[in-house]
Amino acid sequence: MTPYEILEKANLILLEIYPLLKVNKRREILRLVYDIAKIRNDFSFSFLPRDAKNYEQLKKTLIKLRYPSSFKYTPLKNYYLPMPELDKKEEAELSAVDISPQKIFYEIGAEKYNLFKRLKEKCSNSGFIPIESLKDSLKLIGSNSYSMRRSIWVLVRQKSSFLKKCPCTRGCVSCGYFVLNLGLGCPFECSYCYLQGYQNLNAIILPYNIEDFFSDFESRFSNLKAPIRIGTGEFTDSLALDDYTGYAGELIKFFSNKNNVLLELKTKSSNVDNILSIKPEKNIVISFSLSPKEISQKEEFLCASVQERINSMRKLYKAGWPVAFHLDPIILNDNFISLYRDLFNEVFSNISPDKIRWVSLGTFRFNPKTAAVVEKRFPFSKILEAEMSIDFDEKLRYPFPVRKKIYSHIISLLKEKGFDISRVYLCMEEARMWKELSLPTNFNW
Image (cartoon, rainbow, N blue to C red; front, side, top):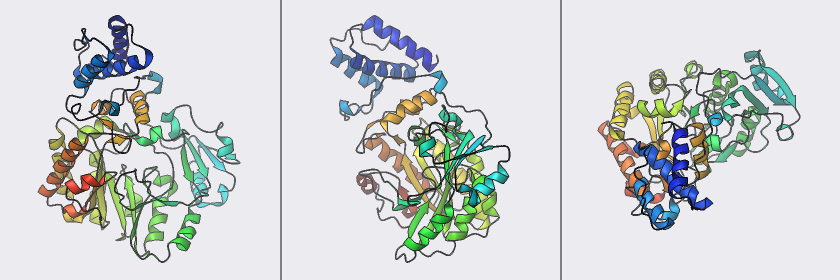
């Protein structure tokens, strides 16, 4: 049965068996019943208790079925039980698409800058539409569908600082990352992407005045006493659009002679030809987000395959570029250990462990409101079927013991490959986890 059919049947059977449930109680019970039926492939709903004496007993019984491993130590209030919301019109468009935009809106003034001139040349078939400002043109810009955001680009003047400290989640150990904002929006379609619940305009937004960043950086960071790491992959992919923006080459040239600065370009693409044409720099690291092949094929769409990413990482490594990789989000799977062992076999058969600058680990986590977006856009994905609950930072996460077990297994697999664990760090994780895994929180790049 499809998710749509399961939900329809669950609605009908609840009306039949529990007709007196009020709205909020019905919402929670429907969520539990829908999840259990989907996870168990039990479309006869034989698991439904027919003798529950009241709502509280019914809810507890169903929670034990839905969360068999964690219900003993997780407070009931920490389970997030929203109404299942499915809409075929909201499903992500996953067929192959041309990244080239159909329309490019640009704030007046962009014409003088390199990005505009480059796009005029590269996107000769696109419509260029001038606007006074993004704020005043929101009704004109953007698509009704998040999936169509790739077809609409907006060039804006970045007025606030390009460079900001990473907004580390409350209660987490900060890795000291600085975010360089060179765009908002990604052309790839990953089921777990937080941007799909974060962006409020269905378009790809690019600042056209990167030249202002360079002068601003010179004035603010000219006398650094301690090293900092800067990355562009927070709100967009660092290299996915580089054939259009040319930003990677400009950044590499600018930072190549900067003391105490480490620039990281993080990607799920295989778009590295522009970088391979440049002389390698020791303080520029090209990193790749990786997942096991089986997980990537089910949850990461329109981006380069895992094998293509590893091949690109090998090309860069052989050309003399520093490389790194990120395992984030780590998604729990029944054959989790063997999948990651296979991934590491592939990575380290291509690149010597001592040549990988760092590996970051972060388990799947997200804002509860994002769950509804994920469910609508990827109704056939199974990532929301895991046992997750509201955790220390008000995000949905795997329980602490599960996360610890995941990290421990990953670290053991890395050790098997001879990787130096002092170059492993956790992303968006609480201090208690670092301590229990014996990882130093003063991670040194």
